[in-house]
Length: 481
Length: 86
Image (cartoon, one colour):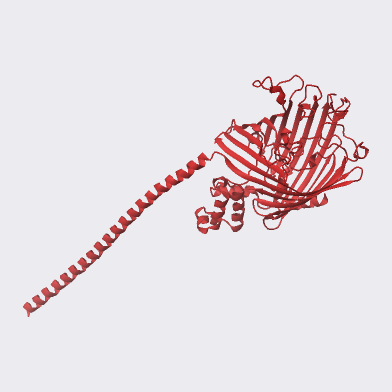
């Protein structure tokens, strides 16, 4: 019995041991399999990682290629495109009317921008502006400040080309030198009508056109703690003598003469904003035009019939509030004053001796002034619709530098009253349609002209050729992309 | 003129979201508007995954709209002012 018991016990223990061994082996096998599986997965992951790394390196070379192409494209272009349909009627002082309807025009603007270095960039604009079905040159296209600004032929004119040289960008007083054909057109507050951001430096009531010059801008924002406070001192050349015949015997030494001086312009402009009011602009300015030439297009100066006729001082003050207090309202008010100083010299045309806002050798100074107010309101989803109104008044001797205005009527040079109202439909971020109406009621003659004495419209000696009022219904499409 | 004064007063009373608010939101999320093009910003705001990546999803719907408007308006290819010295 004892032996049997020992034997049974031995068999039981052996069985248990065997069973235990068998379980451990199974677990071990399972673990081994798991490890092998994990090792395989790790291997696969490593392979994948290697592939990703290879792909990344490959992608990096593509990115570098794209970057290199980006750097090779040194000038970035953007598009400006305007198409206008104008219908206007002129009423002359003698009562007769002339209608000009269905007048189409297109302006193409190729805007250029290049970052030359961290401290230097370039901007330019090539423009074509023409009436449909016509490539006739506007008689004043040859005025330097009107090139590319008034309808002419289908040629491209250089409307802007300037370098910004940031002299002291990181200092408390950043200063920038702007050299070349300046951003002196389409200035405030014209951007509301075009539904763009500010596209020019100077008040459009005083200056609108191309201008070659040098401007030193000093950013006073840090020193004054008032955002967007910039003081600008500018020099521009209004007229330079370059009669082609003067090169005949001096082909390589440049034009020169002793009869007329170049017209030079000096100005000082202060931009600032209302503290605490976002998107506000205040601009105060003073400029002086020296030695204004009677007729920049008449190069026959040798007979002393095209002399310098005097100088003009121009003062300006404006305020502009864009989306005032998030109300969807944009409002502006501008004021200008011009003081002309004729020197008594005259330009003779058809027997009349005309000088700077004067005739027959007058020398007394002539003061003129103008005001321009307006507003725009946006409504509907994402301000898809906008309505705007503008009014400007100019006095008898008001004179400004807006001969290069995009507006073919040069509305802001009016000596009298001008009204404009428009409705705008914003097609998308880049394009809009504008339906508008302009009415101009002239009180005095020769609006926009530096030469000749202004007269009351009703006492003009040539009523058949003097426009008393003008009204225009227009439709415009603007695209900026 | 009276209408203008009324609208002006009303607008002062109803001061809402400002650009300063949008700038603060962008800064809090370390987003620079000029780092991307308009289409790229729009793409981000259309993708919940990308919004999460830039933590834009943590903002309220209204703040998201304010931020999107600011980023798109100041994107690298947005309409920029052209002024001497800028």
